[in-house]
Every structure is written in structure tokens, then in C-alpha cells.
Image 1 (cartoon, one colour):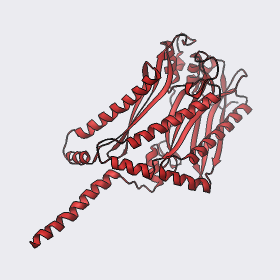
Image 2: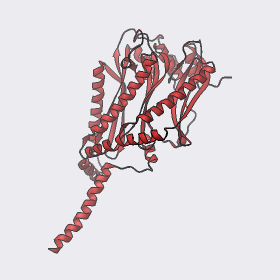
Image 3: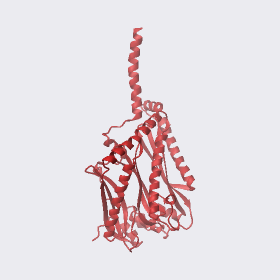
Image 4: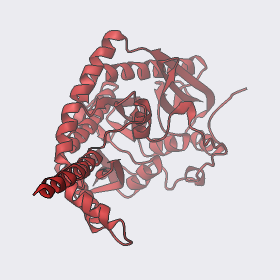
Length: 413
């Protein structure tokens, strides 16, 4: 008897490529940062930027869990693992890393692991992307007091807070470079099905995790490539197949971030206008300008690559604090190319049917909310120093103190 996590559609699609359902595979690792590492990471969190001790801890834990998952799958006769996930949880005050996926059986060959589902794996294989292994790139970082104070002062004026924008842009590119390096070391020339996640890790610390499937396409290169030459794409398997059918191939995952402040004057003006019904033009224009700047940064990055288009673009707007917003743009730069047509004339219906999820869990698992910033606030007791709120409070407090004193002074005369 086989206990598999593959759906009927996945089993059908993989059967077309010579694979069958295998057993579920799990691997885990429990890690501790240690006293010395804890003090060092605390000091770095004050300065801001990457916290290398935590980055290394998380990377080692995730890789150890994945290695054990792959070993378990091989022991049970699988030739590969699909749907690989890497999770981070807390256990008795320590950090537990959990990896799980579903094995597949077939003709013996080079063992592989992939983050793709069975359906996406079919699309990858049909489009020529042979899976090699599940890869990742991560950065654990903190805003820091120094950068936070500088950025807070910049919030006094309306416009981009470049200290925040530059840090977030730099962190995302570092994580992507580490993903490409891991793929190149595995002998791959592409990473498909890339996913980006922002995960909380203790008070004031966030992990940016980028995962994907390192793959080899014989038309992209005739052998190993350098890390910067590894193609990356966040397109789904079906999208990748459809674009290949149209004569397009991915070049790189492109990302851009813009952090904008409403400013003190505009913030106070918007606050008073909010008392009456109607549009707040200051806030509307701020978001519009921030969005335009973010897309322009994305356009410049794609243009530098020599891309013809950016597809699958996702635009995310987040409020970091009242009056401070972050715009994130993520997409895949593509170009036209000959000789990349898929093997099949059309995708089977089972490859485009969306599987239903018959299990719903509304309550947060292990107390971790979906919003990493909210989880960070819970880790600090729910307190958050809002620079804009502090400034407005200071202005109000100043006036409440000056007016009575002035009245008393002029009253004597």
C-alpha cells in the first residue's frame, strides 16, 4: 500500500511521463542559535542589515531537513520528490525546520527533488526543463536603530525613503544570487517555479526566503554555467509551457521595491481631510507616485538584461506603518527564442484543472499569523514605535504646553 499526497490529476499527468505515485517523505532538524550567536545577532540587529548568524542557522537547518527528506524518499524506492516545502516552526523554545514532499517512482536515474506539483512537473518536463534538485536562497535581516532613525527623519518630508528602499532591494537581490549559486553548484542552468516568502524570525527580525527547482534545459547551455547565467522564473509550469509554445523563454526574475512616506505636513493635512467624506488626494497621489517609481525600477532592470517583456508581474502594496508604504513589483523578464517549443501539441485537460482543497483550517497554526509584521509585533509585546505618530503627538503636546504658558505670561501684562 502506498500513501501518496498526489491528486488524481497529478498521478495522470506524471503517468504520461513514466512516473507513478510514491510515499510521502518528511525530514526535520531542530537547531539552536547558541549563547554566543544570540549575543552577536542581537548586536547586528541594532546596527541593521543582514544578521549572518541567523541566516546561516536557518540555511543549515533547512538544508539538513531537506537532505533527510530526500534520504527517506530514496529508502522507500522513490526516484524523485515533488511538491517539496520547507517550513520553520518553534518547538520548546528552539527552531524546528520541517521539509516534506511526495515521492514518485519510475525508471532509475539521477534522483531529483522539486518544489513543483505533479502537474507543474509534467509541464516542466514537456517544455524541456529536467528537474535537478530543490534549491533556496535566504537572508535574515533587521531594520536596525541607525537606519531606522535616519529613515524616520526622512519621513518628515513626503517622498521616497531611500534608506528603506535600498535595503529591501539589496536584500532581495542577495537572496536571488544565493539561489542561483546553489543551482549552478548542482549543475543546473535554470531555476523554475520560484517563490518568495517573508517570514518572521524573532522580535524585529525577518527572513526573506526564495525557493525553486533547479533544472537543466539542453537548449539554454551545453553544460554548467556561472551563477549569474542561471535563468530564473516565477512563472507557473503551465505559464512556462504556454510561453514556450509562443516562442518565449524566461531570462531572469526581476524585482523592485519603493518605500514612500506621506510626510508630516501632508499627513496632518490628510488627517484633517479624513474627518469629512471624499477623496484624500495626498494619499492617492503618494501611492500612484510610489507605484510608478517601482515599475520604472523594474523596467530598468529588465532593460539592462536585454529582455523584450516582463510577464507575470505582481504588484504588492503594504503599509509598514501609518504614513509609510512599501510597493513591491515581481515578474519574469522574457525574450523570444527559436527551438524551445514543448514536446506535446497541447496540454492534457488534467494539466489545467485546478485541484480542490477539501481541508480548511482557519485558526493560525502554532500561533504564527499570516502577516510577518504582525508576528514581529507580538514578539515584542505588541508595542510599535510609529515615527509619524510620535511626531504628531509631540506637536500636539508642544501646543498644549505653549498656549497656557503664553496666556499666563500675557495675562500679567
